[in-house]
Length: 464
View 1 (cartoon, helix red, strand yellow):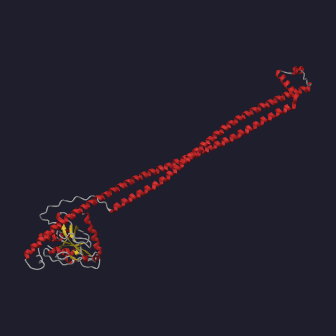
View 2 (cartoon, helix red, strand yellow):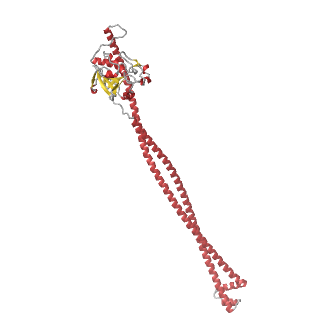
View 3 (cartoon, one colour):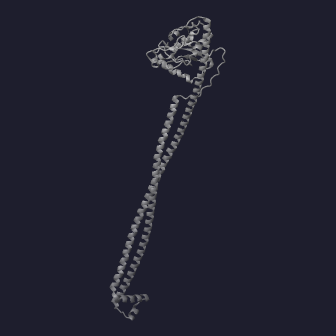
């Protein structure tokens, strides 16, 4: 009987027992007699099985890449909005520049028109001044002549003093003007000259104002052009940043795609491995069932034969005679194999078969072993060896010391394997060969065939 006072070791056994799921199906040589059987075909190698750490790291890589892509996508949205804003600013500055150029052009045309008007006013003023000066000169000459010679308004006087026909006409006109009001005529001439001078002054002022407006408009146009250039440069710089981030996102997206493909590949490998493992488990279970049926049949035949040979009366058959040799080994293995799938029950099992378990005050009670009919590890060994007349003690530690101790590296089919912790044996099983063993492992499990666990393996006991 295995002690239930070592829950840590039992937990280790539970974990190590799971190794069976990753093990190819047990060949016929591992569960059937070695003699007279065809060699088992080697099982195909399992497909790659990515570890949980590798899958977790792959998933984290995908998540990190996705997070980076998301961050860059958000950054791109910000840059896109900024680029659009800057493009609108460029368009606005362009409109302002066009308006400033139009204003400058209009101011230039207005200044040119003002210059033309000023030029015309200056010409008119100059002509008016010359006319007044000429009239004043003639008037002064006429007045002087009159003053010197006296005024002769008769026809002979006019003709005799005129220097040319125009002078004659002018003298005639002057005579008429003087007859009306010589002072008034001169006053009007002077007023006309003043009016022309004022018009010229206004024209010059208008030209100066137009020139100032043209200069201001040209300066505003130049400033608008500079603002347009600055806005366009800012938009180009922002576009460059956008292009750089877009290129970076494309690279990260590529890495994300690669990580997702790698992750999908790993998970596909895991799925293929799980499918392979399920198939191997199915084949193993089928092989165990066949082995169990064959072993039970052999055990039943042997028991019937032994009962006939003993010819003894009584409610229960007599103990089997002690035997040895390869046939005895196969009988022991057959009896153990016939119990594959029987539930574990702490304290359960004896030389006649499975029995109800007992309370241990701990883990076994939590699993209800005392209500189950089955085997614990030492009970299974006791039943298996009873078929060849070997009466083993009940405690696994005593069973381990019941026969010849051999080196671990010399174990062979039919040997008992035992594990110890702090010098105390806590588990025992039977070696089947090819690195496999049969055991009743722990509460909640069933009798099974599994690879040998070398961690903690303490003794190898040979009974024959």
